[in-house]
Image (cartoon, rainbow, N blue to C red):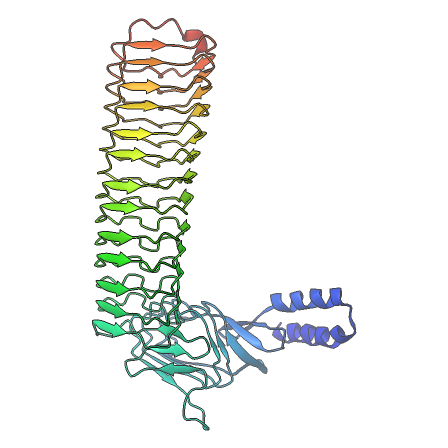
Length: 490
C-alpha cells in the first residue's frame, strides 16, 4: 500500500511541471492529504517531498528507548507533527535523528515517563512547548555544530531551561526544577505557551523588560507562584496564562495591556487585588472565573462585553464598576458572586445572558436599562435578597427560571408589550403577593408561579390563550382565579 501511494506522489511530481496552476493546486492538496504507515509510525508527505511524522502507535512492551529515524520508507523525515507522540507512557529515553528540522506544537505532550531527550543540531523550528506535562523529564541534550560548538538554533541553561534563538523564546522550564525563584534572562522576548506548565515549586518570578508576549498556559497551575511583575511592553495575556496560580495575591497590569485571554486567571483563588489598565478592550470568557478571594474590581471604559463566566464563582466580590458603553453581559458572567449587594448596569446594556446573576444570594438592587431587549433563562435565579424589579420595555419574552427562587421579591413591574412568560419564571418567589400581567401576554408557561405561597392577587391579560396546568400550583392564598380550564395546555 505504501509503495502504491509513493508511486502516486512521484507521478504527481512528474506531471506538475506541465500542469496548469489549478491542477497543481489540486495535486498539492491530494499530496497533503495522503497518510502513510511505516511500522509504528504514521506520516504524510509534504510539498517538498519530505515526510512529517503525524502519529506513533505506542504499545505495551515496546522498548523504553525511542530513536526517531531520519527516513521512513526511503523518504527523508523533516518534521515531527503537532501532538504526534502525545501521552506516550512507554517512552523514557528519546533521541531525534539528525536531519529533522521541525518539532511541532506539544509533540510529546504528557509523555509522563520521559526522562531524557536528545535534540539534533538540524532542529531549526521548535513549536509550542513540545514537552508540556512531561513530569519526569530531567535532561535535554543539544547536539552542537562543529564550527561553533553550540546548537545553531537552540540553547539550554545550566538549570535545564530551553530557549529558541530564532524568536528569543523561552520554550520549556523543567517541571522537576526545585528552585523557588527564577529570573528570566534579559533578551528573552516571548514566554512561550505552557513554558512553566505545572511548575509547582516556583514562588517568585522576575520577567525582564524585553518580554513582549506571554503565551497561552504559560504559567498554568503554577500553584505556589506568589509574586510576579509584568513588563511594560506586554499587550496581551494569553488564554489560561495564569490559570490555577492559587497563591498569586496581587497583580498590576502594565498600561499597554489591551487583551486578557479566556481563563487567563481562572482558579486564582488567592488573588485579592487587581488593577486593570485603562487601555484594555477585551476580557476573555471565564478570565477571572473562581477568583474567590477578589473583593472589588473596576472595568475600564473600553470594555464593551463581559463574556461567559468571566467573574463566575468570585464569592467575595462585593463591588464592581461597569463602564458606560458596555453592551453585553454574557451567560454566567457573575454566577455565584455571593456577596454582591447592588449592581448598576450602564444604559448601553442590551443583552443579559442566561445565569448572568444566578446565585447572587445577597443582591438586593439591580437596575436594568430600558433598552435591554434580552434577559436569558436563570438570569436572576436564586437571588434571594432581590426585593423589586422593573423589566425594560423591549423585553417581549420572559425566559424560563428568570426569577425562580427569588424569595424576597415583593414587587415586579412587567413591560407593557410583554408577550410570553415561560415556564418556572417566578417559581418559589415566596414573598410575592401581587402580579399584574399585561394584556399582550398570550402564553403563561407551566409552573411559572408555582410555590408563590403569599400570592393572593393576579391580574390576567384579556387575550390569554394558553396556560400550564401547574402555573399557579401551591399558591394557597390565590383563591379568586377565574376558570382557566379551557386554556390549559397539557
